[in-house]
Image (tube, rainbow, N blue to C red; front, side, top):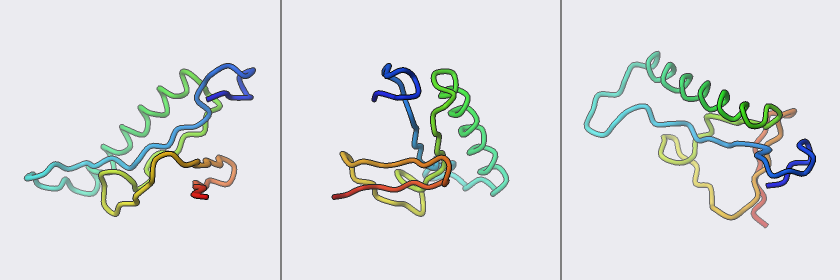
Length: 94
């Protein structure tokens, strides 16, 4: 991806990360406070690592797609727009 914020050099302009599962099959589901803690650790780690490469990148963590419940199905190969100013995620399926 080419990013105009970085003089046209190849870089990541945005990162979209699904809400992580925080329980395992055949195991007790952790309490809500522990699930929130586990998700916060992952969120903070992702933000820290992406910021090392592009502190201007839009990072959206916790969207319910992938292996989580409730679950959205997001088809591959389409354009997804992350709007950091409006705090929105939108997809173009045309």
